Length: 525
Image (cartoon, rainbow, N blue to C red):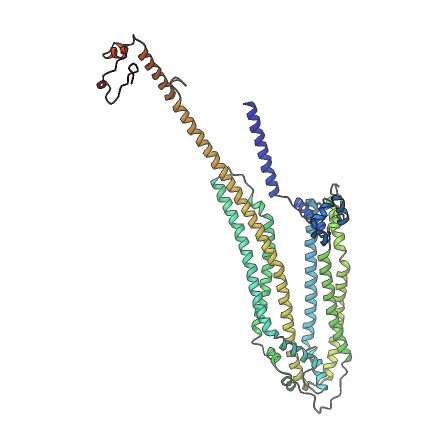
């Protein structure tokens, strides 16, 4: 018994260890997931570095033995466990990424705001449309060729129609993103509700805390909710501007042919007004346009550098076992952020130049408007409408492209979050099912043991257990008593009528035992 108990306890320990190992595999912490990913990456790196001819002749490669492998595979660039990060290091990385995202967003917003402010200031004095119209008037009228080329491009590419279709397509993509988000939110709420109901019905259940498991999911969901809300506002603006394309007269000018536009833009005719030197004003406007372009390029470089920057290299330089590791992580993050101060300063200098340049343009334009006669402004207004329409289409195209790029990034992330939430939901459900199975098995086992005990009690003898025994011993005692009666001559049964037949070996009369055929063991049959 002691040996069997030891074996049973050993089996229980093995089963418990197996279940613990299985649970650990299912619930890998983040740093072990990183080890697994790096191991997979190392395997892929080794496979990629084997020449194709060796991969095609795997049998030949294996036949050469392990000695041939170092010739075909290079060593790993870094040890497998070199970049394992603890929770404090990961928090520093997350903090750096969040701060840099805010930094890039603020720089982008500032650049867009300053550029839009400069354009509105120029539009308030009808620049550069008035200057373009004046030059064309001096050249005989008609639409400027550069402007007509832009109008012709819009007509040939059917940009207005394509823009409408893509805007409606953007609305469909936005609905898809919001649908995925709504399904994910619903799954989170259902898991909480099911867990609460199950715990009410099973008070002994001590499974994983759903709210703790969903904490990271809900944080990501909250961020996506804010992003989708902002994008929805932008989409609504785009759709409202789409409706204007069929109503505003300036967009109809983009459908006219060149001859029609030339008639709308007559020349100066025989006007003997003196020519105005617009060279300086034109040069200032070109300089401002280059300023806009340079800041956009610099902003793009900033976004690319931030996206490609690897903060892990600085974080790995910190000794995680040091008592001042937290402060060292913060210092590493600040140094990394400081490395982008140069490009940010460049953008700020660009913006500072805008104010001075814009003031100079306004002063030069005032002299230009005073020198020009007011009667030749109809052509300028027409050119202004055409350029405004083209600029509006360009802006719509740009915002549409940004919207599509946004959803191209967000939708896969939402799908991934939905998949993670679904996996967690399945695991929680399996945990509840396993509890139910174990609970039911325990109840069935107890019920079976109770039935076995009652059966054993019914089979026990009357003398066993103080008279509460079963029927087996009772029947055995009756059978022994019957045997004694048949073999003892002094038994009262032999003194009863018919007993002499039994003693002589003769048959009892058949009538004494109706339905029984007696057989003699003395006489041969």
